[in-house]
Length: 296
Image (cartoon, rainbow, N blue to C red; front, side):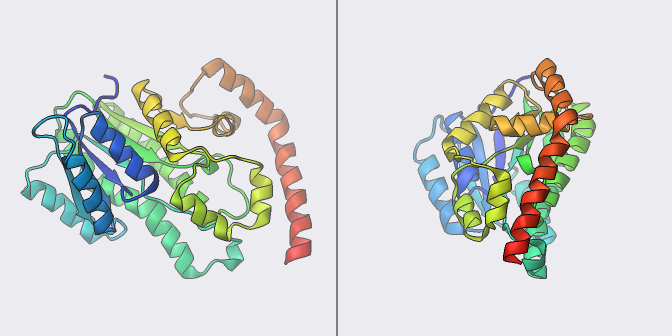
């Protein structure tokens, strides 16, 4: 069954701003009942006020739950709240995450812990609590959507606090796809490129110039365009969703056991990657060595 959310209940994490906020708005517009999660209660209350003032049908709702998703006890309590309120869950979209681009030796232990908390624990804890709800759902379209990143296919200097956890989410999603797909729950992994969110602006404040050099010139798309690309991929049942061409190319270069999108073309790019990707990486290594000799 294709992606549908009309009159279903969808949980969105990281919903107070950026992509999570836009995803929640679009779900509401599509007729979903939405539960928005984040730490910022005021921002969540604002979303609820706007959504509930513009219902598409009488029993549509948006509810908020202020929570630190990296704290397992709080996530378990959220599950208990759902049971107490008699709220079922049909789908979940895990949007929480942030990046702190720095050289590894410039990161503090607290920075590393924050990366693990925000980029992995917020997702794995929430899924552990919600998947039993989704298994119980009788809705025709049940979905688990996990936001990874295009750096999961090619990690490079500056993203040591971020990329390893996005790789972990890819691995988690692949495992869940096997486990849940067999019982009719669609697991989708999203690998966004750059998009102009509040988090992207913060990221650029600490990003080393060499990280930008390796990353290459990239004009970020708007958050709205990013969300539209994700929903379009979900509508078409795409298992790995990319929001830019370079992400698709990086996926093709590391194809392996991954799900295919435009299968014949990916095989061609996989062959190109096998021939030339290492040469590109060697060039990046040269740039990094030159940069470090001047800056470290």
